[in-house]
Structures are given as C-alpha cells and as structure tokens.
Length: 161
Length: 206
Image (tube, rainbow over all chains, first blue to last red; front, side, top):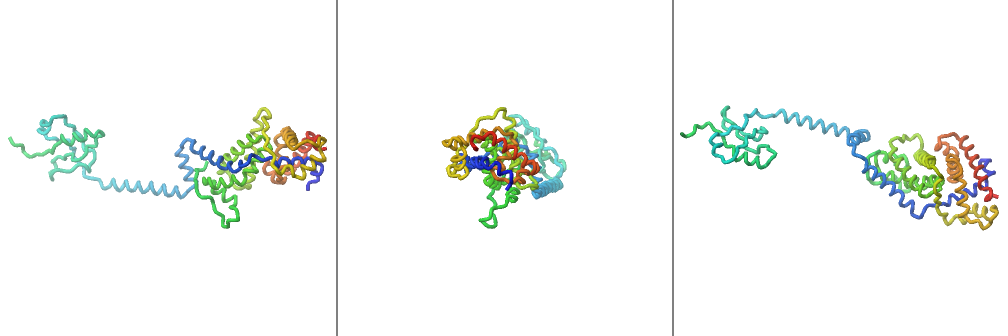
C-alpha cells in the first residue's frame, strides 16, 4: 500500500461514495443498442462514395480483389471472342422498290440496318439488296412498325410492262 | 469506417470462457457490429463511470460515452494492438471528455446520479458520517453534492487521476498508460489532487 495513502484515509473513505452513484435502472441495458443504432445511422447518412468503398473492400478482402479482377478479365475475353466471330458486311437495307413507295399512303421511313443479325440476304446474288426484316432499332415503336409496313422486298425481277 | 456487417456474434470454444478482446476487435475491424456490441457491453460501465465522475453530469456522461464508443468504432482501423483495447478505449474517452470540459465555458449544470441502496450500508461511509462529520445529521445526499463540487474545482487532469485511482481503483501503471505519462507523474498529480480535495472538504473529514 502506498504510504501516502495513510494521510488521506478519511478522504479515501469519502471518495467511496462516488462508487455508489449509478445511472437510472436499465440504462446499461439500452446503451449498447443506442450506440449501435447511431453507428448504423451514421453509415446510412454518409454520402455514397463508391470508389472509396470499393478501395476499402479491396484492402480488407484481397480475395474480393481477385474475384473482381477475374470477372473483369472474363468479360474482356468474352467480348473479344464475340467480336472475332463477326458477320459478313451487309449492304444497306434502304433499297426500296420505287413502285412500292408510290403505292404507300404514308411516308416511308428509311431506316438503315442497325445490326447485322437483323438482316438477311435475298438470293445469292452479290447485288441483291438486303431488306430489313426485323425491328429497325428506332427508339419510337410507332416508327418501327411503320418501317416494317412500308419497306418491301426489293427485287430485280423485271417488272411487267 | 469499416463497412457494416450483421452476423452472428462470435462463439467461444467453451461457453463459460468469454471471447478474447483481440478476436472481437479483429471481427469489429471487418465491420462486424455484433462483435463491437459485445465490446460495448464489456466496457460501457467503466467508460460511463469515468466520464460521469469527470463531468458530474449524467446527461453529459451519456452523450460523451456514446460518442466515445462511436469514435472508437470509426478508429478501429488504426488500432494496432500495441496496448490493450481497454487502455485504447479509455484513452479515447478520456481525451474526448477533457476536450469537452475545456471547451465548456462555465462549469455547467451538475446532474448527479442517485446513490444506490448499498451506500447507506457502506462501512466507510457509515463511519464517516457517524464519527467524522461535525453535523451528524448530514445525510449522504449532501455529502455527495459537496464531494462533486470539490471534484469540479480540480483541474481536468487532477480530477482524472483521482477518478481513475481512488474511485475506479486502477493501478498507477495503468493510469500512466491511459494518460500517457510516467508513474511518477501519476503519483505527484494524485498527491496534489488529494491535498486540494482535503482542503475543500475539511468540514466533512474531521
């Protein structure tokens, strides 16, 4: 025991009173929940910094970085593989029979072929035009439908006179 | 701040053996709120008591205790294990409380906790009241008020050392680690603080 404590024995006894000062009953039962709720609330209110969050994930979970890198690489290779297959160059599909145009009642919407897969060749001739057999790729459904109605197969079959 | 996870709390190998702080801290550092909740439950009473004895206000102690744990959670990434989690947490709470007291212009409102039932039967207090006080009818509530007023007259560091040693019973070495000073400084501060208290409470210590 510290010798100096002997001179303060009465004070030490009085200070024991402070050990009997306690918060309201049940206070410590509720305190942890309050703290956890505040932590969660602070996390929810924090502005979403996706880049910092991503870096934190990489730092704390190296395995996550590995999976992320592998996934990126797989998508890259898949993209390369898809690009290599390709399709033969297509001719524009806006060759429309002039008579078919005159026969229509409304305007003809000329739409270029947006994607190779949506077009098919007519015949085996290299000069045979390609029609647009599918959706034109227009953002407007109405135009898309009208396009299909108005564009007819182009053909080099001699027209009856 | 670690990303939050809500997972099942860690289970010790034996149910009667509590999970070590180091394991809980490691899991909390990965965002495991359940692990941090366990740490809060272990140290909330001691942290609250320290802050309360420093402020003599339940409201301030409530706010500062919560903020200390929140700050500890945010700073978990910087805890390297050089000291025990207990010491590290205490340091956060103490620094936060001292900064709060220094920024407060006036002494603030005293908001004392009630004394528990056992206070009336504490042998030290019973002997103090019946033999030492000039006014034998002095009750414990009055003693409590005078004691807290005398504590608030001390500077923050002297109040802290009395709180940690004489009220909470921490050894000098642990107090030195918390206050980041050597044992000699702890002893000298403690001696000075006791002298001041004794002078301010002389009527109640005769």
